[in-house]
Image (cartoon, rainbow, N blue to C red):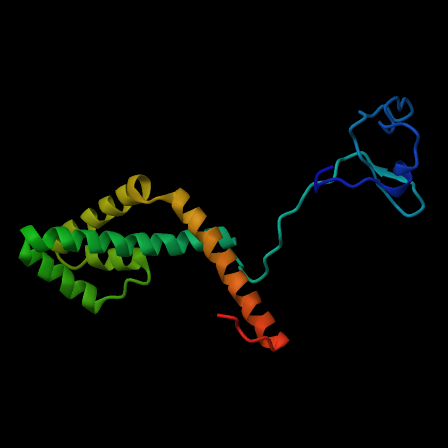
Length: 178
């Protein structure tokens, strides 16, 4: 059985390999599992569902939404760097104007950064629209989402292994054999 269902202990003692396969009293399918109290009374015919971990302290957004917001800010930073690199070679005046704006405004909030940029001057408005285009294109076509997932799993596993190894070495008073 999977992680989602549990079988009450009294069902293991039944002679049939398919418990309640011919249950005509309740007229329920044989694959239904029941929640029971310790007195073994029938409570519900709904199957139990697996639950994801509850993560407290995120208020209005899930951890995934918070990660997506951080990625949006990161993609904005990447788009600004790409546009700066493009401008450096063919439009030094626009490059200088954008560099001055970047140096005087925080990139921590992507939307606020672009909103302020659009209200500064016509030249910066055009550059802000270019950053929006680059950000969207990079996110949809160039960013390697599968690689992000693999790297995230690997980095968490490697960090956990290192921390556990360091803890065991500290507490066991064993010298490293290297």
